Image (tube, rainbow, N blue to C red; front, side, top):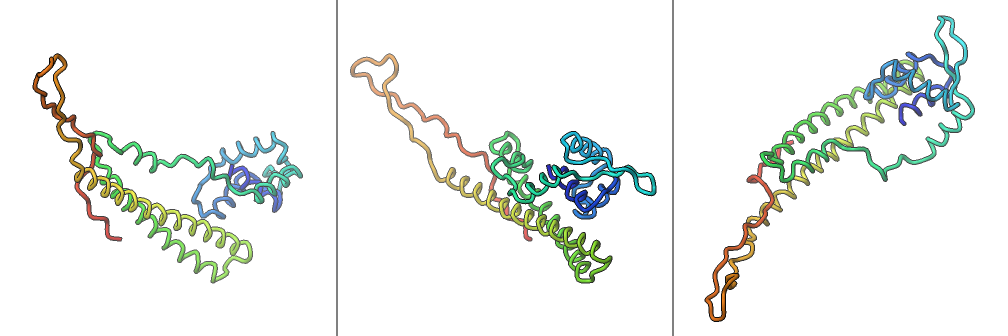
Length: 230
């Protein structure tokens, strides 16, 4: 839905053609979520079907222009006013991967965590470097109001990505610490001892037979791996 409403937000500023909308969308988000022209026109056609946009002639270069309708403005206003729904979170590939790795044969879940942490920390460093550049661009106030607006928008997107990767790194640390605690608990717990019970055909006075306890199902874990130095 973000592409749909993002295009409405751009059209609210005035008529635009398809590739112009793509360029402005990517400029506003720093090309974090690149679009192709086909995706833009598919979305515009759906918006037109829903009565939220319409075609409004051509510009001097012959580009077909799109305009927002009153219903589109109402939809955009509602989108800005309503909070993003978090009750049905989007599928997270990393969370699914770790959930499936627990107890999976031949999978070292701590190695998975370590590998992901290295990647996440590198991404966070890259985003931080880009943030410094964005801050410099905002402070320089280059390109006039439109350029400044795009730089501020890109800065907000970058800061969201930084906070997101920071949270992911902390979560990975938490996952590894929990696995270490669970492994230590499983190692210290001797499990149920051997039980003494008469055999299935034992009669009165028959001596009890010692039956070994079944092996305990313990968490599949490796020895603790030192956390990556960050």
